[in-house]
Amino acid sequence: TAIKIDGRATAKKINAQSAEQTRKLTQKGVIPGLAVIMVGDDPASAIYVRNKERKAAKLQFNSVVKHLPADASQAEVIALVQRYNEDPQIHAILVQSPLPSHLDEEAVVMAIDPRKDVDGLHPENLGQLFAQVGEDFPVACTPKGIMTLLSQYQISLPGKRVVMVGRSRLVGKPLLALLNNANATVTLAHRHTTDLAELTRSADIVIVAVGQADLITREMIKPGAVVIDVGMNRDASGQLTGDVAKDVEDVAGYLTPVPGGVGPMTIATLMQQTIQLAAWQTGQVVD
Ligand code: NAD
Image 1 (cartoon, rainbow, N blue to C red):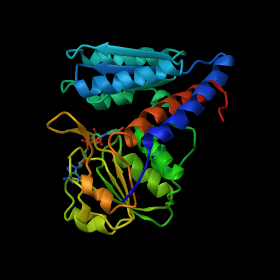
Image 2 (image 1 turned 30 degrees about the horizontal axis):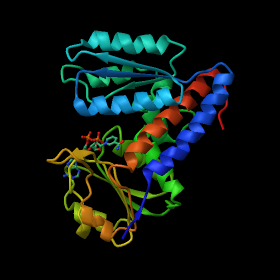
Image 3 (image 1 turned 135 degrees about the vertical axis):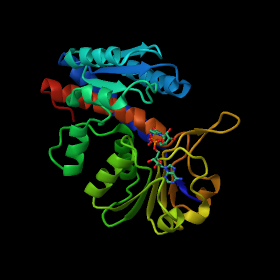
Image 4 (image 1 turned 45 degrees about the vertical axis):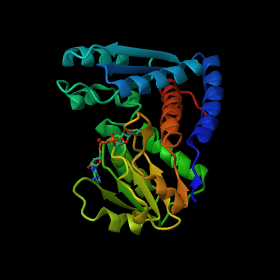
């Protein structure tokens, strides 16, 4: 059976590092500042926001959560983003997705100061990632956390065949760039892909970010392959499940569990990147 890639244990290590870095920065008068904006009452989003808030408080960040009502106007949301853009105590801004459908998510992302765009969604940051230009820019936290997991488990990437399933701006697209920059050979699969199983069967590494339980089954995985499950779905009894079927663990070489795999890494990486942005914006160095 597959070796479990333990996201909780790895996140714990990163959080310990983050606590130490925060302590050093705070001594120099810089308290990492994270602002999370949530609009409406999506229950899943409320849980994610609460988890982020807890972790930021635990690390003694300057943590602000602004919860706007579901009928907030586009102008209100943008005004709030602009307020945090100008606030020197805030170094990182995260707008929790999804936004209610009357809001223009693209315009909101464009309003975020790219230097404070902690989820790396702004085209300037995504563009730098694809162009491999510069180093001091934010990268989407879930993809960055997955790269950390792969490196922690010494899973090498050069020359490996990776199938990335899902091409969202938050997960699939940045991962495509990160994996390509790490010299893997990456195939990007999505809703219109035909014969997904044929692609995944030849992959050394399969990463799935779709949001469909049991999309990836054991017949689709090459024996010994690494399987990274980003999906978060609720089954009939309200249990959290990923996109990968249970029996994949019998054939994969490595597998991330859900919960306890990618999820905790996303939050740990968000904290790590908030610290990094605080340091960049104030001319400090974190090590
Ligand atoms: P999204 O809904 O924006 O995009 C889904 C992608 O899946 C699309 O690119 C689509 O083309 C593709 N897709 C849909 N059906 C497909 C199929 N049958 N075969 C192949 N591809 C298909 O998704 P997202 O925001 O990237 O999120 C994906 C999943 O990951 C969700 O379950 C979400 O909850 C989860 N997620 C988890 C974390 C975490 O920290 N663990 C972070 C972000 C997202």
